[in-house]
Amino acid sequence: MEDNVQEFCPLDGSGWSFAAIPPKNARDKIMSAASHLFCNHGFAATGIDTILTRAGTAKATLYHHFKSKEELIAAVLEAEGETWRGWFFGRLSEVKGPARNRILAVFDILEDWFADPGFYGCPFINAVAEFDTGNDAVRKAADLHKQHLLTWLKAQAMEMKAPDVTETARSIAVLFDGAIVAAQHARDPSFARTAKAMAECYLDQQRG
Image (cartoon, helix red, strand yellow):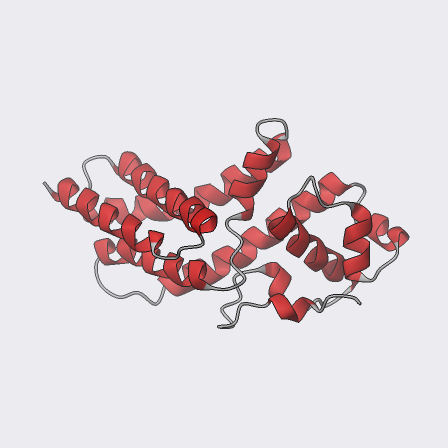
């Protein structure tokens, strides 16, 4: 029996995953199936036939839209990144108060994400770890995704008048990524709170 894509929709309806969005056309149907399988079972381990079975489409349809599996992976990462950033920065836009509050709110949002039953970690972290340095397209996609966060963090650090804006952004990003990996491996959302406490100490030191 073909899996129902809606089954994997985040229960709170937050819409952080492209795979949870009802497909609008054949291309989206293929990408939705591939996204779920890549993110939950691995990029290399997921074969084209498995994607076709889940999507319920013919091989000719897939290759009409994507010339190769590598092209499909790149499209999935782009779609997942865009969807997740829309959700994440949308949540951040609701946070009131000074920059310090907004930075710390990052970890509250992460905890909500980690607690979702559909949480599978960050597809970019997973892809880079899986392909190591052997796939430039994957690494470039991951770098672009991370740049959005770093740019936002730098803006908050500038507002805080941090002594080293770049280093402040990088330090928070390290806690951000570390919390994601730890929560994924341990299946424990509270790693977000641990990272938040560490971020508070770091930001307090920056205020000197």
